[in-house]
Structures are given as C-alpha cells and as structure tokens.
Length: 474
Image (tube, rainbow, N blue to C red; front, side, top):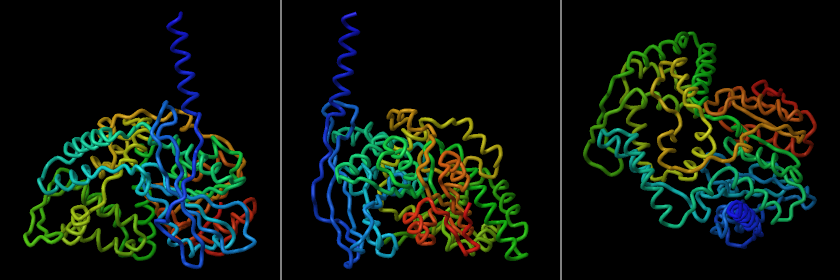
C-alpha cells in the first residue's frame, strides 16, 4: 500500500513540475526579413524540450513578426507554420509582401521544434548518405537506411537530445505558448499540408483565442497517410490522365498503356551511366521500376511539368529512360540537404504508430502496377529503428467545432486529396472548401488563391465567391 502511494505521489509531483514553467521570449536578430517596406521583429520562444518530464532541457524556437502595412490594421494577426513535417516556416517572410493579407494584419511565422532554424535542429545526414550509397554501391537501400537511422539516433541521444519530445503534441503546446507569450487575444492560424493537422489540433486543445483557421491541402491528424498514399497517387494520376485525354485524342489510352508497361517490368533491373557533380568519370548505376514510378510521381507533383507527361510516359514506355532517369538520379546524388530527423520523429510517433500495415498493403492489390513502391520517405522499419513512443490517442481523434475554417485542395494533389477537406468539413460545419481544378499541393499559399485568404480573414463567416471556373467553392 505504501509503495502504491509513493508511486502515485511521484507521478503527481512529476506532472506538476512538468507543467510548472513559464514560456519566455528572447529577442534576437532576424535570420530573414520581409521586404524593406515592412517592419520585421524577431525572437525565440523558450520552452521545455519535453513537457512531460521533470527538469527537461530548454529549447529555442525562432519566430518572425512582420508588421501589417496599414496603420489601422486589424488586431488579430495571422500565425503561420509550414508542413512537411520538417519544413522551415520562417523562410516564408521573404515573400510575404506579395500577399494581400499583410495590408490588414501582422504576420507571424513560427519555426516548429526540431526544424531547420530551431535550437536544436534535428537532422540525419547519415540517412541522406545511405540513400546515395545504395545507388553507388548497388546495395539494398532499406538495409543501409535502417542502419543510418540507428546511427543518427545514437548520435542525437549522445548529444543530450530527448527524441521523445519532438512530435505533434509538443508542437501544439508550443503554438499555444507563443500565443500567450506574445499576449495575443485573438489569432488566425494558417497551416499547410502536415501543419493543417497541427493547427487543427491547436484548435482542439486551445480554442479560446482562435478566431479562424486557413488550411491549405491539410493532412488531418486522424488520417494515417501510409494507408492512403498509393491510392492518393493513383487517384491524382487518373485525374490528370482524364484531362489529358480531353485535351488531345493522342492521349487516349495513355493511362492504360502506362500501367500495363509498369506491370511488364515488375521484376526487372535497369542500368545507366552518368556523371554528377564535378566527376569526370561515368558511374554505373542500377535502378528499378520503383525509380521509374518515382520519376512520374515527381512530375505529377509539379504543375509546370504536367503538359510534358504524355511525351515523358511515351518515352518511358519505349524504354527511352536515360534522359529522365539520369536527371532523377543526379537530384538524389547531388542532394546536400540532410534528412530531417524531425520529419522522422513526427511520422513515427503520429502516423506510423497508428497505421495498420495490412490496410497499407491492400493498396498493392488494388493498384498492382505499384507493388513494392513506397511513396513516403519514412518506412515502418525506419520507425522501429527510431524507437520513440506514439503520441496520445486524443491527438488523433476528430472533433467538432463551429470555428470558421477555409479549406483548400488541388484536384491533382497526389499527397492530400480533396476528400480530406470533405472529411474536415464534416466536423467543421462553418467551413468552406475551395478546389483548384488545375491545382496541386497547397494551391492557395502558392499564390494561386492568396486573395481568398484575405477575403476570408476579413469576414470568415461570409461565403466566398469565385468567377474563375477553375476554382470551385463548396
């Protein structure tokens, strides 16, 4: 009995100490500045690395405030954080002067914990190097990558980093702490892709000061993306192929030819020779069907490449791989960006921890032409090596809210399909949905629909209208 009481008291004391902190602001020089016509202020938010632990490390998360240009601006600023997970948010201020919202409101860009300009920044160059080696040595990529994940984990732990503190739940609390530390009474949250789910979680847990949400191609936290990703790619591809057929009779049947070709090369290995970087000698590299799918997948994600798809696919079907596979491989081999360990942590604790691999593998039966292709750069095996706990299930639960929400999606988005907006609309009845009929991932923030953001923020309960037939409002 005494032992049970002692354990209970320790748990209570630990929880009290974990929550007994005051987030602090530390003013600093700006790593990025907005256009010279706008005033920029910068700082760090200082918070615990892990709020559930006693005597946690303190981490520093940069934010940048760009002041609205109107002296009579609204008092409810915009708070933005980007997707990925693992992307940098504060770089966005360099182009904020192009957005009309800055005429009416302050814009706050907030760097998520573990990302590029946060302290610490979690990176795994070991993984990037392992991927390169897998091509250069014709070795099994999964084995090399898994070994690299173990090395990265050991290095970060050796540097005193608590990897269990880098997840969506902690980032949710970071955003609330920033709102309170800046003494904001009302704020509009903007999130894109992964951070669409993150910002929704802020609304779930801390709704009091949230005036509205703008979610561009959001990935709901309740969605385990690995159960959907191949189906999403197939659906987006089908949308593009259908529209290509409407544009030209030469494209009729192209989708079937493409899938039939991929089925015919399922177990084949190909070879190419290329020079990259400053090398003066050609390197022999082997590649497979997965790389060929990767080429087309990359093009589908780039709206500037869609009109080139018919020729690209016709060439690939004719086994004219070289110009395309060499470009694809050079991008991999010349990549100097370290793999994001924050991305790994979020996917492993948030998505993969709850994913049902039986459901994920069902996609191969429905879409056999992609059998063996894994669209995500994080796998279940990598997460086993990373070995961190799942976030609490409450963060994954959908919830209802009457807060006004603007949702957008691109018809050709192979990552976050418009159906995710329909799902969120069910729980957010005061939301409205924009679908960009020629759009891909995050079409509003990529300037195609930025004016709708401003219109919505100025009157979030008013129905938006569009005279552009390529932008549908639901």
